[in-house]
Image (tube, rainbow, N blue to C red; front, side, top):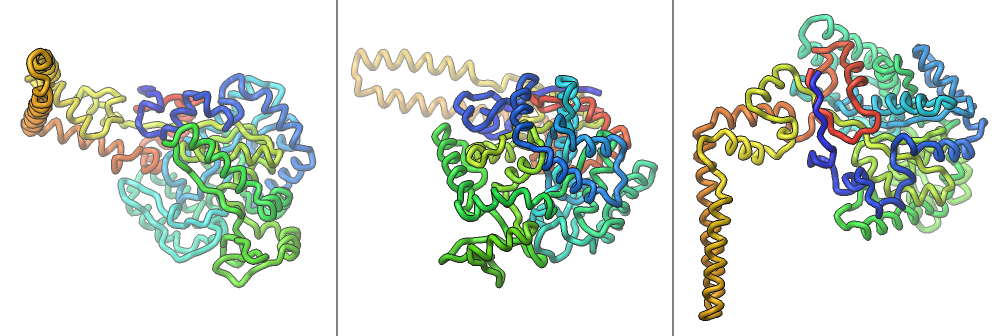
Length: 533
């Protein structure tokens, strides 16, 4: 197994905000508690213990037992669920949408990051227990984002009309996806394992939430992963005090808006990841999930016949808390209210919006978790590694923009020097002499000298580009091979982990695939891993 490590901020795939967070920029300190590392969890453990009473643990334990009915957890997972009742047990959480057949590869990287950190913390703090948790985004309603996955370069899509929370969707229509998957798969033991996994998950369960729980459990239960669905009345009831502060007092709107402005003052280039609303909840009922808005003294559920006075709204919340669904701003708060959580692990986009939330957590008196960037990796087959060697490519070269990569390699392999930097330096020196001459004779000629300098430097640039273009034609084979390899590894010029599905790699590695990732990925990710197998 070949491993190369490229600092994350050097890959060009992370925003300025996340790059600054990874560098621990001092001005960002007010937007998080502590940066993840071996020494960062002691205070977090103590504070969370004070804010998470035993009664909440009992509610969590009962909810998980209910959700795991009909699904046989591994001994490690069952033990972790039981441990959550103990006051010295804490969670490490990652969350993800219910993408069909896990969706892109980074679904695995998120969960592996949570498992590895839980294991490392147990070594660091043996008197405590740490449970890796996958939070299923069952209340999301963006079906188009989750209804497909890519396999062997083809998009396999679940086509149907639907609305409301995706976790509640039935699995009608997935037989057609399975049939297409089988057609593309081919034969062999590993193919048979993938077919069985898809069939048992999606054709053997009534809802998408049930199918996703089965799939994640099948892949990770041997590592003690606990899977939770927040769409649960007993859990939602614990959110009621915070829900009221949002719906009636608009505290999250005020706090997050202030944080966004403060982040802009640190650096205008950061931009905004998510905008808060005055009300950050949807109403979830009868296959619908619609926003709640306050208007003319009433609370309206958009695109529906439902509306409430304040008194009616409070009564509805008490009677049916499960009908109120948090949006992207309120969901992190919900997670931290119902879990004894220490750390949230997510991608760059997720961490960017979490950095907007600390003020809201403070105002709500809920401990803010440690924020850790998930692992990222690029996987290379043996054939692709040999291609790299033949083209004399280093791992870091692969992350260049394609035109820059080709120009760099053409300059390296060309038998003539296509770098006109010495000529530019010589020309600039000649014009320095001309500037001095003009200053001593007639300064009105300085503009003409400058114009000639610009013209001749542009001429050199043009000649260099033409020569490089000619060499590209001459070395067309290398150009084609470079582009083809990079296109294989970066589909659509995007990261492999955001495009390809784990099934492509499981076909080659089978049951060794996840253990290999578990072994090679980092506990505290600071590098983009390039893994050859």
